Image 1 (cartoon, rainbow, N blue to C red):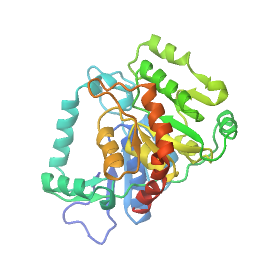
Image 2 (image 1 turned 90 degrees about the vertical axis):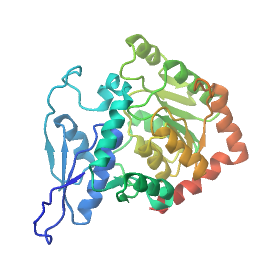
Image 3 (image 1 turned 45 degrees about the horizontal axis):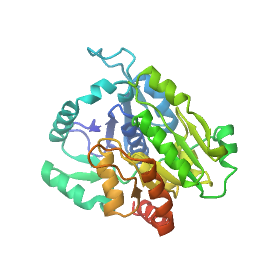
Image 4 (image 1 turned 30 degrees about the horizontal axis):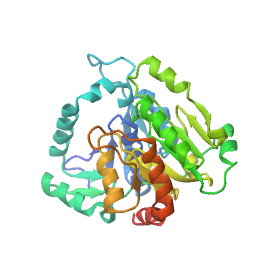
Length: 334
């Protein structure tokens, strides 16, 4: 995020801001929500992005906010049709490059805006400010607008079969995934719980074709129609708001956490990479607003029994149910 105001400009003029989000969907849409909030408070905002992303962004962006699109120059080693980090998984295996760029950006900034609140993360916000020696500005959790449209008829019909708050929705977002073997273990664990469930599972972008075919062979209804497994894009906010959905198993991406909490769903965490681990620690250990599926310490493997345990025994002890009010308090704290 950068200001267009130059030194010597008329300070009576409205603040002008250009948004250029990192090319990952978990970053793009928080920037969209922030843009909407700034525009609603009189700030002139322009969004800069790639041409292929304009239609996706326009669906959620205030229609009065202009979008400037520009193609990036070719980069050796990357396909010409790359438009987000989802398409560049080999590039993502070099975390030292990403880290150095992040640190460089922060060190050259006058201030840092973070998608959080003091009520949720005051110690972390203050620590970041002290380490970077510059202001850290919480933007709030940036709730998206109520999702428009309707669920796919087949999916809506399936969800409508179940009582209020009984369905478990499981999704790992657009850029995180489990191995096919772990997906099968997860689904087996969900079947063992006895709860109806909807699991949206996708293979990694660089997964071998055989592995994708293996997953696709598993797609469909499970447990006598009580469970459903699908792949591809789904309207996650609409699913979470369906009356039948009462619990969200997710990877700990902040957008998924916020969407599930806003919808009043109970949270079960299964982090996969990156900031999903500290996000999970925050929600489970500090805020006590979620529970997590345990993994083996030496290799990160989890079993179907671990899935069943956190869902069934957690429900019996009230752990899963008790987080609902705390989730709502997190949202109210904004």
